[in-house]
Amino acid sequence: GKDSMSGSFNDLDVPPTLISFAIAPIKAGEVLSPEFKEAGHPVYRFAPENDSAQALKTAWEAFYDLHRQGKVKAAWAVENSLAEAVMKMSFGNSIGFQTGLEDVNWYAPCAGAIVAELTEEINLDCARRIGETTEAPFVALPGDAVSIQELLNLNEGVLEKVYPTRAGTTEAVEPISWDKRSIAVCKHKVARPKAVIPVFPGTNCEYDTAQACLRATCPPTCWPSRPRPWRRPSGRPRWWSSPAASPAATSLTAPASSSPPSCAPPPCPTRSWTC
Image (cartoon, rainbow, N blue to C red):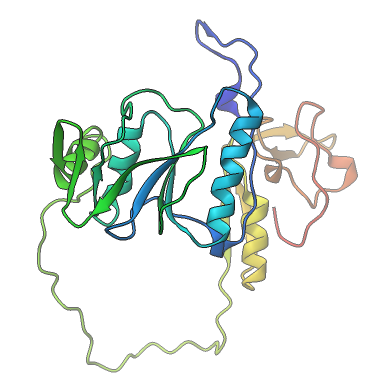
C-alpha cells in the first residue's frame, strides 16, 4: 500500500487490483547472469510441451537440474520473443549468435520459456536447440544478420534522451595534490560522526537506515519535514508530523500527557536513536 497505488488520480479511477510479489531464495554461487559466456556453445529453448502447469514445471525442473550439474552458462527468461532473448544475451560480452537449420518462430510470444547457453548437447523433450554462440559479433537469424553494436545502439537509443548513458565529452582530469603540511589537527583521536536522516511525507526505510548507522557506531537523528504545530493543554505549541508522514516523524520521547491528536500516527516504541 504505497501512495502511488492509492487507486485514483484526479478524474482517473483504478479498479481494485491484487498484486502479488514472490521471491525464490538461492545461494549466491548458483545465480546465473544472462549474457553469453563463450563461443561454440549450443543454445536451447526450454518450454513446456503443452499449456498445462505440470508441463511448465517439468521444463523448469529439467533446466534447474542441468544448472545444478554446471552445464548452464547463461540463461534468459523470455519476456517477448526468442529474437529479443538472443539479442539481449549477446550484449554483455559481444558474443554472437547463429541460428541453425531448426524451424523456430523467432518473433512469437513465448511466455514461460527460458533460453539457455549450455556446455554440451542434450536430448530432452522440453528442450529444443535453436542455435549456437559465435566469435563473430553478429546476431544471425534466418534471412538477416545484424551487428551486436548496431542492435545495442538501437536498444539504448530508445530512452537515451531521457536517461543518458554517457555524460558529455571525455576530458583529461587534472591531478589534485597537496604537498604542504596540514595545519588543522583534530583533538579527537577517534572519529564519531553523526547522521541526520530527513523524513519526508510518504517516504520510508528511516528505521532501517538508523539501524545501519548504529551498527557503524554513527548516532542517527530522524528529522521530520514540514511539521505543523498543535497546542498542548498548557498552551505551549508542540510540533508533530503530517499523518501521511513516516512513523519516525512522531516523537519517541514525548511524555504520555502530550500525545498528539488522534488523527496523527501513534508513537512507535522507544528506540535507541533520536526522532
